[in-house]
Length: 123
Image (cartoon, rainbow, N blue to C red; front, side, top):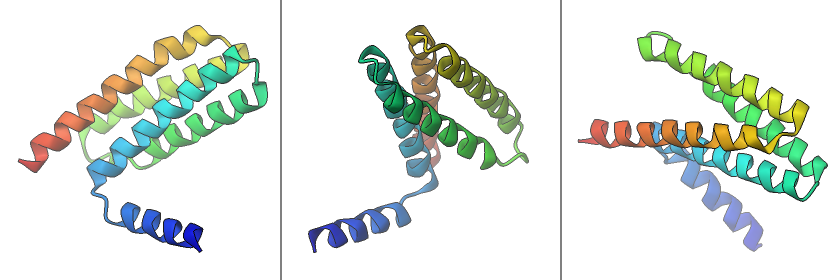
């Protein structure tokens, strides 16, 4: 019974989010999955590592697929997302934690930039 109420709450929360809030949520989830992959790699839990990296790739692909190419900035973002996908492939192939250390700050910086832009747009 409580599970159903929680699911309804989650759906209502997602349905009432602004585009900016949804974008920030996706970036937060990407950072969370990268952190999870990093921890799984340290723990030698390769199944969780692979799932975390795969989910990270899915999020980046979604971000790329939803770009509005009518805006010039979208071309720059597409290049950034392509770089992220390349790095995630490199991470999965080499299981090198240094790749996560390089990638997480870039994702966090981009998230913070969108957060600031969202604040500016709201004013």
